[in-house]
Image (cartoon, rainbow, N blue to C red):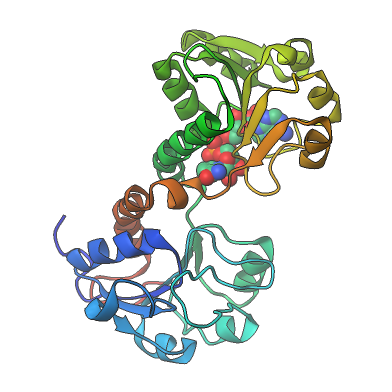
Amino acid sequence: MGAVLEGVRLAVIGGDDREIYLIPELQRQGANIIGLGLEKSPLGHSIEHASSFEEVMEKAHALLFPMFGTDERGLVKAKYSNSPIVLNKDVLESIPLGVPLFIGWARPALKAAAQNMDITLVEIVNRDDVAILNSIPSAEGSIQMAMEATNITIHGSQSYVIGLGRTGITLVNMLKGIGAKVTVVARKSADLARAVEMGVKAVSLTELETVISQAEIVFNTAPALVLDRNLLEKMSREAVIIDLASIPGGTDFEYAQMLGIKAQLAPGLPGIVAAKTAGKILAKIYPPIILEYVSPIGKGVR
Ligand code: NAP
């Protein structure tokens, strides 16, 4: 890709190892990077470091926040920052008109505040391209967790995958490839039909209780409480649950622990197990999205 971001001054605020791979790619595409909360990163002097949001707002054409976004108090995940970075009302009010804010996952309160203040907030985590590409490291990472948590091989295991969305499909394909005996659990008849086409067993969510005792590994991708007390009670105490759904996951973890079933919530896998790949995915996805909102000479197009 050429220097499509030539002239664009992009503030990268916080983040984790993904940004360490994302930033050089964005620079290769011509972007000028201003970092906030990256002073301890290995990027050193290859980027300009801002010391405050005030400085960022003076210089940047667009703001890029991490995939994880913020916590409920507005704290931005910033692995390489010397001090906490908080995205609060004052910061939002200081964003100049026309400067878009890109973020992985935006909390509802942040979305509402941005809307009230007429800030262009672009949430990317639910875009199909991002979700499908991210499903690769997520699926790999969840299989790695399952390998570590079990004393059996994935090959030949009774592996159940709940939800056949973007992550579920990738996971099923990978599990099949390793030789697992895969069962897809879904609530839509179209998804159950797709599972049959994929050559795996298909079970509707309502029937799951009749077969779940056979499961050795259960991967959940449905963002709702599906693995409730009733289902957990029917599971083998030796089964392992890897829950990929966004926090708080889809498992009654407390009850699983009480029963002695190993259940692990696995948030943010791409950044943990494959930061380089995840950073490169973002580097592929972001430039065209940024250019939708920022003109090549760096002026906001809002
Ligand atoms: P997706 O494409 O929307 O798929 C979600 C699947 O869950 C669909 O099959 C959906 O079925 C099913 N589902 C949703 N609500 C359900 C319910 N109440 N009962 C039963 N099934 C339900 O989402 P995705 O991109 O695969 O992501 C799945 C989850 O993983 C999300 O929570 C996402 O944030 C998370 N995620 C985590 C990681 C990680 O690192 N752990 C990485 C990527 C994504 P219907 O079509 O019937 O609704």
